[in-house]
Length: 218
Length: 349
Image (cartoon, rainbow over all chains, first blue to last red; front, side, top):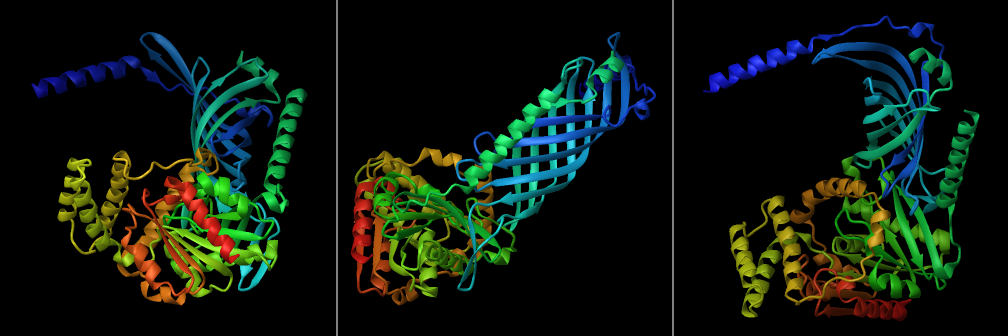
């Protein structure tokens, strides 16, 4: 019985897999003919955990590589755009009620993004190079019996991050897309170990050369 | 597009201004202090939230429980509504706890260094508010471990010590748990209160090793102690806690709080229940002392109240038992708690 079931599954899988007829069609990337601004999208987003930390995140994404993969599924042709982007962010965050967790951060990394025909996007953003600088309220340093006020108190952390998110492309609009990410950032060294933090990011992308870009898409 | 950029620029500038103004806000009105300041000591930055009336420069420093708790947990009930009217209350996030930051190895977290942190806090208060500041120290639960550790290093800065269900003898806690569970279970079964639960407690304490061998058994007993207090609450033996400030949830990032708690506990608890006791050294604490204890405390059982009172070296000391309280009399009998604390501060300030 089990053998029959396995055979059936194998047949169904094989049929489904082959009837999809995936044909990774690599259109010749036309990126080199585009200017820097045409390949770059800027973004601004709310970044925080709503209840505690809240802040803003600004960034830019530069298209490094773009391929369009076309596949036939149930007789219908579907094409997805896959992009690798160089990604950079600058943001700040604070908990307004006590200001004990205020900081700015910056990070650089790579984003992989898939955009389907309807403009729906899925992204994974990995920023291995990250820096977080906390800013503390009035701080006094104690050494023995000596007490001194600290100038610009705070601490620096290596802060790599990983974001996974969805989005929607908005061709022909001033704002070229919107996105929602769940962001994981590690601050290290933090106390006697490290500190994982989670943030939500909701924001918009815009392109300073939007019109020309859209004309090309159309 | 220019318009769009202008809008975003305005938002950014507004946010930065707002952020800066909030982080720099300071109410210098001593009769209604509302300060947050950090103490930097031995590679740790620890926040102290100072609220209340400092017109007479009287400061009550509260050492939170845990280890790994957080200072503002205590800013509720009559501590906020009554005690803050009489003096300034300093809610302190200890090293590795609450919103404390820093960069140190695991060897940088010890009761010895944490006691030095408290002394550093006292120096900062005197530096900021004046050398004539009058300091009182209060410790609850684990804060009752850290308090004696601090005072045994240097008690000259403090006018009084308030021990609230404090664990000055963590080494003796395990065996006292077992004895206390048996005693309370027998009492409650006699009173026909939740007999099924208390019978299960007797079975439970019979099943664990009768002497400390493993920290996991200690945690199991500790968890059961909290559960037992809930059962006592349900049987109307102890009052339900009241006026705990629900807004405190917005003052701490809960994930940070839990992460810090787990980390600091994993470091400190290694030796806490095996070796640590200040019972034999309490006689060296000679400043006026007030010992406050819930009669039905299952977490740090009442046997330790008499032990603390008997061993403290102060000639001016008082023991107050809260008849309808468990581990946190400040929330279950807040009026009596405030009366006793204010009376003590008035007497010795």
